[in-house]
Length: 340
Ligand SMILES: [Ca+2]
Ligand SMILES: [Ca+2]
Image 1 (cartoon, rainbow, N blue to C red):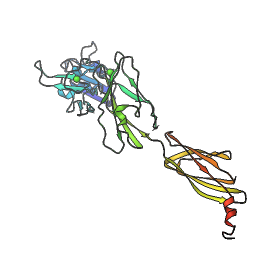
Image 2 (cartoon, helix red, strand yellow; image 1 turned 180 degrees about the vertical axis):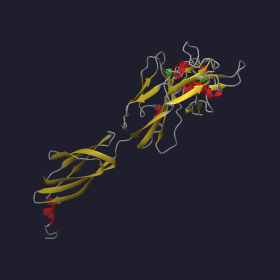
Image 3 (cartoon, rainbow, N blue to C red; image 1 turned 135 degrees about the vertical axis):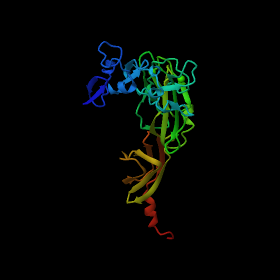
Image 4 (tube, rainbow, N blue to C red; image 1 turned 120 degrees about the vertical axis):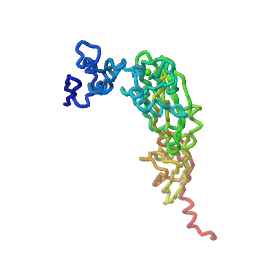
């Protein structure tokens, strides 16, 4: 506990008290503890971190219901840091106002005197709605892999009542490249609860996906009261191509009337495969690899289709077939004298 003494009054309070239920101990109420003194910012902060001086120091207001235009001084309004955005339209700084609203700016050149105002889109112009200081909160479906068919990523929005997400901005870049500017935009209506975005079918994003790898989506939303959300991002592995598969015969070992076969499935990326030697045997590989050795023993003479159906980790599939001719006869021929 700490004690503050102002004039002839003393008040005990918890150090760094953050509630705002004691704010009205200073200013227009019958139980005013600090009658006849100014409810300055220092006095108000003494009553709790969530109190602030308002109405020309006539009373301490509560941050829970504060708006930028309640702030009377530059320090209360932004204390050296206003809300700001970069050339991409992304919020780069939130105001360090006395109530951590984050959306305050100071207009020093008004003819009716300098004023603090809410500027949720950081364009220097007071927003049409001064009371909504909450930007949308965008969520997204957690997707780790995207294949050549693509998949919808569902973006969802949380807004306060009487508000909705009006714009969604987005872009994509490779993970090791510099961050893209979320310059593609989609308008939304008040009844839109989800924005679906498939990076493979979106013309805006597809041009940037030219190889397999990890990509980063960057995005933010703007509500109907001009509040811009700070840019969010998430990374996803994208493979826009089918795996390229080749099958080679490693060895054919003839025995009396059968052969042992060893084949290799090669891919340009790690794949899992189902395979089948026609009418003889089928099976699956256990893990993702770019090389799979498959062996068959005692395959009767004849010719067979060998088929490999392989998929990469994103589900991209390719099916390749070759015909093999295990045959013990050449071996028998070999022991026949060439010139008899
Ligand atoms: Ca504005
Ligand atoms: Ca809002």
